[in-house]
Figure 1 (tube, rainbow, N blue to C red):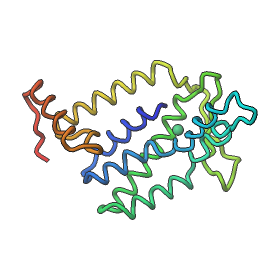
Figure 2 (tube, rainbow, N blue to C red):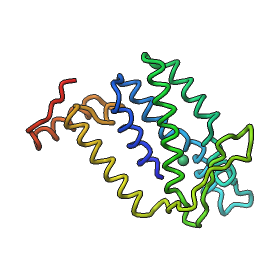
Figure 3 (tube, rainbow, N blue to C red):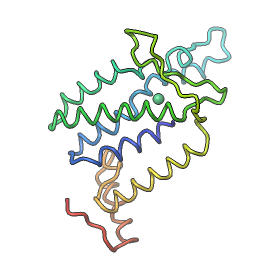
Length: 191
Ligand SMILES: [Zn+2]
């Protein structure tokens, strides 16, 4: 699925527990971070028509969609979080939510399934894929993204925070105020 869908999934998951702002950030980013291995798309596209194209996306995409990387990310979160075990556990869960979402719907336009080499670099035998996988741009992904976005707005209205808190407290507060003015009844979850 797209990074936006992963991001929103991580955010919703992070809001299922009582975490502080930094811990929410760690759990949210754990749902996006496997896709840093896809950044090779940029040099690959840029060099596509050159004499020496760099096939970094083709070669490395999904190379960090592994248990080993999940454990590294969880260990880093453990180091940075105040509620260490709780955050590290949710980070592991969030990372695996990303893998699950990729299994569901990330088939490329060319039909390639991008199997997940879960046990790499220790074993290349175990490759996760699902026959019924739908395409990256198919409607279920759009529907899931709309649902997640609605939950995100509901959380902002009810709990008084949105992913904007990661960028600017002011922007976050402005969004919450707007939502609460628009829908005044029932907001203000005492938390
Ligand atoms: Zn992915």
